[in-house]
Amino acid sequence: MDAVLETHDLSKSYGSRPAVKKLNLSVGQGEIFGFLGPNGAGKTTTIRMALGLIRPSGGTVEVLGQDVARHGDRVLPRVGALVESPALYLYMSGRDNLKAVGDLLGGVPSRRIDEVLELVGLSGRQRDRVKTYSMGMKQRLGLAIALLHDPDLLILDEPANGLDPAGIVEMRDLLRGLAAEGKTVFVSSHVLAEVQQICGRVAIINLGELVKVARVAELLESQGEFVVLVENAEAVLELLQRQDWGRSARMDGGSLICSSPTGRGRDLARFLAGAGHWPDSLAERHQDLEDIFLSLTGGDR
Amino acid sequence: MSADTASVRSVPAEALRSPGPSFLGVVRGELLKLSRQRALWALLAGGTLLLVVTGLALLTTGDLETRYKASHESFFANTFDILGALFNTGSGIVLLLSAARLFGMEYSGGTIRILLARGVGRLQLYLAKLVALAVLGAGLLVGFTAIAGAMIAIAIQSWTGSIGGLTSLPPVSVELLKVILLVALVSVGVTVLLGSTAAILGRSLSFGMAVAMGFFPADNFGTLILFILQRVTHNDAILKVSAYLLGPNLNVLVSLLEPGLKLRPIFASPLVTVSAAHAWTVVGVYSAVFLAGSVLLLVRRDVLE
Image: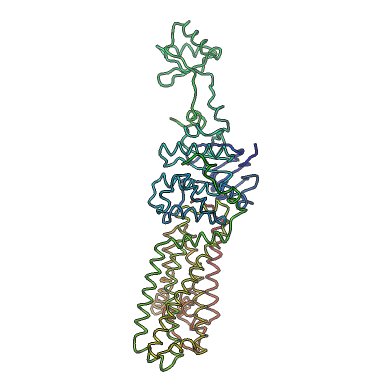
């Protein structure tokens, strides 16, 4: 898979405060890549460096194989971006906003403007001034601007902001459709459930440092733990923690989280039954992305 | 939103691919942004109305008719001088507001990141905005000249039954007109640079507008303060400061370039005698500082908006 977006030891400091530290990422063509991190982790700084808005203090960003700092004029026209809240000319109509951005690269056919407006569901309001738009409509227009030149790489920072549930579903489908066409989507989001549903891989960043890059499916794979509901849970916990294989047992709410002697659920059930603690229920434990994210970034629920 | 992007892209992908940003395209986009500003159109309509009313009031007084009949040269010298000062003031207000807005709104609205994230160079964007503002300035000059010329023609026609006096201007009046046009163009340029620098410096629409609109009044009013200070302190050196203020030097340029006509600037002028070369130098240095400052700030600063 060809890399569409790559960072090499990318760093940025503001004075003595490092915002991004030696970040190495590689995003392949056709991927929907999630970029996650708590507030202030360095996500937006990284995105801004990828778009040539901020100069790196060290390292490089390559987009479509070219260094953005040196060849931004060549590669950035092939990138569509939505950075933080959509930046729009509020006194102009939605259509004029698209025209103004289209002109930057020599203009786009009027038909294309119609298409992207249709795509984001703004055809009916295209002549209205943007200041009269709702937050969700502004977000849609921002997305239309990003899509205007049919970019190879789409960089979206919190694209679900302001969208209603139906809009979020539509956007999810849209991003999947784009990836199916071979476009690369780099999406930063706080809505981890969304990221879990649409992204193939994710990178997690914290305090400017890359903590983890992995396929979402790998992250969500069972860690061989089980959720057990049982009477006398405290006594069972003590019992389990005395076993070599059970030292990681713990309580989570009213449930007992523990491993199995063999990794199989029925052997755990047999052990508990043998000790006189018949479980009310026993199920394999699957973490969601939010759990993993919080454990990797040291956050609390 | 529709997921079926392939079916809605009827424009071939190649037609949407651009080898890079287009300078003319950026200029066109800036002109579009200017043309959609209702406040600008309101300002232009108000300015035109004011010009017509003021012009008619002046031209219908018997004094000007008498002066025209007595000496065409004297009439045109005074009329052109007044109109030149009116243009510089009126266009100055329009251009300062427009320049501060055209630059400042990109920072205040965060739209600068859309522009630069498409690969548009910072210098390219700056120059494109200057060109768009220069087009506006040229449009103002053409419009003003057309309206003022029409009013003078109507007045002369009503006084003499012919506009021959306007179509065959005395050579000295033609020379003066050239100088006034030159100074008007310089004034347009400096004003645009000032407005843009203010907005870039403050990275804000409101800061840009406040500084841009306050600069020339402060500059002109500054001569009065210097005059009062000199009276209080009896220190003549204070008066010399006025020789380095931008507004007064711009105001005095026409009279310095046409000394034979003994024109008196309508607005504040330096409190000491200055030469035309000095006034040009001061205007040139201010322009260079505005230009260099803007470019430096634009090119070196990260875009955090």
